[in-house]
Image (tube, rainbow, N blue to C red; front, side, top):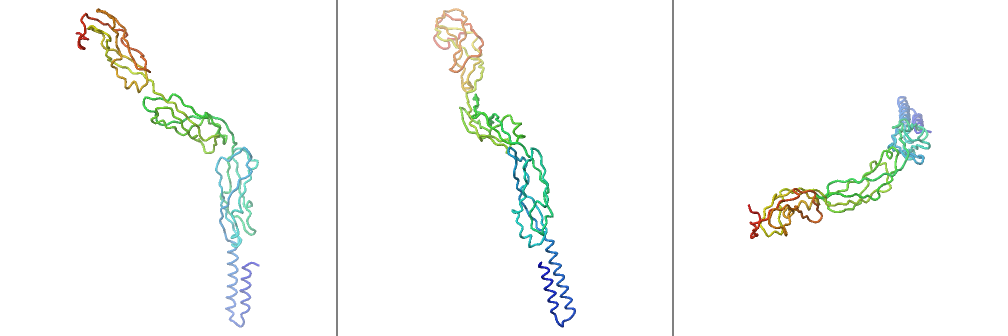
Amino acid sequence: MRLGDFKYMFAVSGARRLRGGDIGLRIFAVVLATGLWIFVNTAERNSREPLTVPISYSSLPPGMVIVNHPPAFVKIEVTGPRNLLSLLDPERLTLKIDLRGVAAGQSEFKIYPAMFNVERNTAVTSISPDQLSLDVDRVVSRDVPVQLAVQGKVEPGYTITSVDITPPSVTIMGPSRFVAPLTSVSTEPFDLKGLTSDTSRSVDIAAPNPALGFSTGHVDARISVAEAITDREFRAVEVEVKDSNFKYRIEPRQATLTIRGPAVKLAGLAPKGLAYVDAKGVAPGSHELPLQVTLPDGMQLVRQSPDKVRLRMYHQKLTTTADEHPS
């Protein structure tokens, strides 16, 4: 017997026990009992309970993966007697989606009230969302080379001579739509700022997509750095005369030299003493002698102008430095 029936019978029997009372009081008791019965039964039948029910996806075929992010919960509303609704447990109502036999691509799953195991005399009257959309893809793998990403610059006057990465390639695993377009993967940036010598570091792989996995998460990178080799032109270099005991005149007195070598050393190279002619054993008179250039180790002469100079030796002996270049 339901609670409403019991209350109704109780009220009626109470009214019948009224003896010798006023007829109006009897009528009031009957009306009260009837109203109470109607109220209780209506309330019990029309109670609603909103629930958030978890979704379980199972039996996905081997080698397949869900690419999108389908909902983990579904919201439902259950109607029925309040005392039965209070017994509902969302975990026991878990919506189970069987993915057995699903193929690559888009798949739609309609959700029906019958898919929820609710109590008898209750009913699922609302479902949100009432349809699930799954994007499924095949899992593939392939080997791709690793490219070192860099930031900053080495110290001025230095240059990178080689880059070595170990391992030079990695295996990528994931949905085919993300793996197929990749021809390489990059690392996190390797900072070159201020480098003047060879440097080795471990750098992480920069994942282009969170859905991808890698055979290793990092590589060892070695940057080889050397002084930059460049050319520098020296203009108006004074031509010196070595090993002369006589006064002389030289034409031209200046030369232009282009020298190749490490940029840092070239920047600090002074032109004095670079160009000269050797007058050892040269007798008084007019002579055409080759212009010679002396350079520090690691540098080489690219070109010079002129190649030869005219040296006129006089009979007068040198006495002071001022006597070297008579007018």
